[in-house]
Length: 209
Ligand SMILES: N[C@@H](CCC(=O)N[C@@H](CS)C(=O)NCC(=O)O)C(=O)O
Image (cartoon, rainbow, N blue to C red; front, side, top):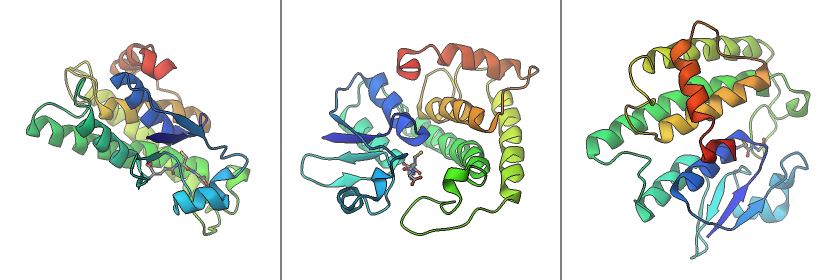
């Protein structure tokens, strides 16, 4: 297997944390997004979507999304489960993670991607060029603020996002909070449950690596 990563990007960080939580050792190839290596002929051949993370399997096939890589690795290495132990847990965790990705991670991305000069002609990833839409900067930020409030309530009476165990829902949530700093969004002081969870999760070796 080979994991195509980019040390500075939030999406592959979700896979890095997952791999570290499981204690797996997978060879890594760094893709420098700032140098636009994702658009090189070789990488576009590997992943026509031109994004990281990518997991290349031993038979040469590739997985090109965070969720696919998580599910593949969870199935292959079931120890230290990160997507639940029962069918009910798995359903709930996947459901929560999807909402966190859509309402939090994508909201921050929407704000950042429509503002940063680096993405002036690339508001979306991939081969095609799309211009930025300036009103989305504020709309994404507002969605992220509302997401913070929801997550704070979710954590009010349980240690982790999906209950008693650390899971992929926590991974996307903590990466989203760190990503939100890119749009200068911090947790409000009155979100005490979210702050408690952030300080606990941020010191996990997988997260601070
Ligand atoms: N569906 C993919 C999306 C991954 C994604 O958008 N990755 C970003 C880095 S965070 C990327 O590769 N961007 C390349 C670009 O901006 O051209 C996933 O969740 O794994």
